[in-house]
Length: 339
Ligand code: NAD
Ligand code: DAU
Image 1 (cartoon, rainbow, N blue to C red):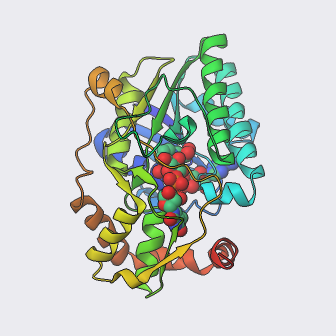
Image 2 (cartoon, rainbow, N blue to C red):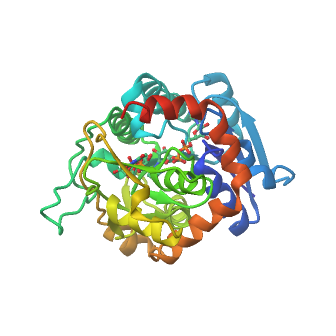
Image 3 (spheres, helix red, strand yellow):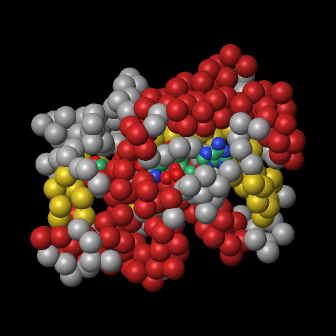
């Protein structure tokens, strides 16, 4: 039996990863360490709680004693835990440094002491910065210099470099993945797709930033999970793997499609002030993971995959309504109230 420590498994991608891996690797055991920050939700893995192959530990990745204890039990670590929302990093950058930078270093230090374990650091295409709209052929490759622009992406870039420095200096088995924008079930409704869908269910307008022409490369979360499993099992230590779906859409195009699928008109769009420092375009060159590991997306076909995701939020109203009723209201007023 293989024993994996997952951090941040109560969030969006982490919880999808737990379900994905336990369904495909029946002899694996997973311990999920998660502090249940505002975006962590135990309901995301409620269906796994009776499974003897799964254990949830409520704790912080900065708790060194706890991390040391869990590290001893596992053969590999998949590290998702992070502050993940760009807009929150503009409101208050500090937690991003504490979790993304210091938390990652705490895990790596524990790994260094334990030795002999594989560490998969889950990162983002945002570390590369922004591509121009006028050069549609340009893409981020693994060799593109890091040029992060937001406190979120700067904290992720720092953690990537620290992780790779532990590989280079201490010979640890570290890998880094950098993925484009994910969509799918269990995404916290601060991110654009679940925010817009749940607003529309409630008959509220959708706040579109700036001119709406910013471009994102959308990948279904299960395609991301499949890529992570391939990297964990077959990736080459010390390597960075970009992950993306070649599915570029402007925010305006995405918004129009969401409105059409949900049978709502263009009058539901509320143009609002742009995000400060808003990256214009992300696009991934995923040739390395495709050729070395044979990975290719199979669940991201547009618009069917988007329609299925929208349907998930329609069918799981209880899940997001609970989230939207608490601290979320304060956040929403702060983020959008005076915009
Ligand atoms: P999320 O915000 O939904 O989940 C983050 C999880 O980490 C939550 O469960 C939270 O409780 C937990 N967490 C936060 N601080 C913690 C701490 N100090 N100790 C323990 N747990 C803590 O985020 P997500 O969208 O699932 O992203 C997961 C990872 O994937 C992040 O590292 C993010 O940078 C990366 N990523 C996300 C995307 C995307 O489109 N969402 C794309 C590429 C990469
Ligand atoms: O590229 C990967 C990244 O994708 C991840 O590293 C991040 O964790 C994840 O949050 C996501 O970052 P983005 O900033 O691209 O995602 P977000 O859903 O916040 O915004 C997507 C686009 O939609 C972006 O151009 C901003 C715009 N937007 C967003 C919100 C929340 C709006 O126009 N209105 C909104 O209300």
